[in-house]
Image (cartoon, rainbow, N blue to C red; front, side, top):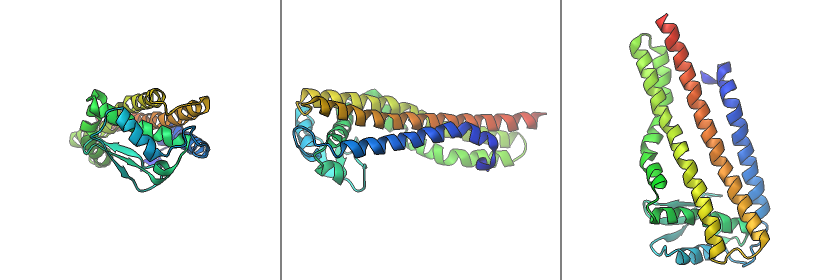
Length: 236
């Protein structure tokens, strides 16, 4: 339905371009710096053990993750999972990605409010993102006040996904800032090339979250515009 609406293309084209640019930037940056050895010649796993010890994060368990760039920190179980390329690689990119995820572990350890808030809204955001557009479609097909109310309920449900994207951005930016500081103070960044590569990887990753936020907000604005227009026609 939405893909054949010209206004949908108008709203979402900038978001599509941003997301595509972010993916290209991340892949090219990772490809470049995954081929550059860090000056300490240590793997992601070795860096993780060093940083976890340095940050007094002895409660965090280190495990492997399946897939490419599937690295993440799970605050519920306090487990840091690294993908094979990152855990085994001795590149600058491996350092940056490992430190970023440990940045999340530091947030968790310090009870960082934005991380807590993001984690708390995950279930509602998942339900809202999946249910919202369904309610909107049903509401637009049902005539009368009930259909309009249902469509607006769908918009509010979908808005939870946008709230999640808004909450995610400061969490990720803060984790990257912590990562760079941690690598510097712990001595794992030794050269200007190390620092340049870490910054490049973290900046590229940050842009993906900016693009995701833009996409979520533009899609929400489209749904608001769509439901507002239908509601206005029904009142006349």
